[in-house]
Image (cartoon, rainbow, N blue to C red; front, side, top):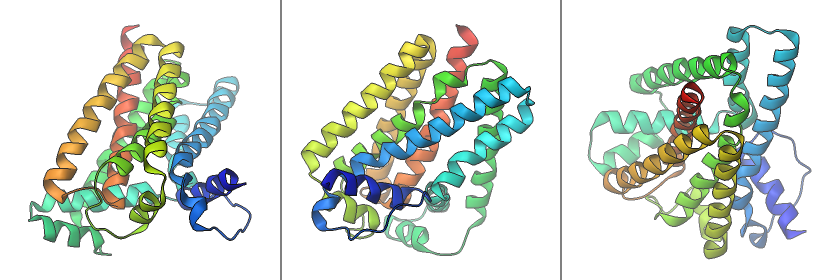
Length: 254
């Protein structure tokens, strides 16, 4: 029952999927972050269905790519894109750490946030279009699980820059050691599945994912002194984009 409540907690926080109302207790939070990748699994299933329907119905690449780029945003309610935009604004300011943390908390949207959001969707759309044309989207679907598993691991592993907020609440309540292990096992399983589906796609995705984990860790610690909910969203959005690039590269050379 505790694990089921943890699952519902993760769905209610990281997606707009309706869940039964329940009184969540502190013990329900121990493994809630471990179910974060479950949202990615739901996104993958929806995209798989859309992919199969599109191929069968002869849907054009532009329509397919547009819907595919929108699906993760619709399912998550844009929660991660919000963090991506806030972090992009903060990093672009080149201010000191304290000021950048203030910028991320500011409710106003800066110019750099809009610019990088447009850049993100242009690249995201193009990659979905290419993978549809190459008939390689199937190899990309586990990336939505992989990126969330690694995001959960980093949130648990790295210090929280603010010592408050939703992410802090989740990580502080977590059974840290076990939760980190579960996150790593989930990430490894998702990566292994990608390699089984397409070795080149899976290998390139794994390399880019590891590189991004290292770069994000360095940036988060140097610029912010740790992670926040916003930087976690920034990590996830870039991670998914890099994974799509890895699958695209693999599909081009196989």
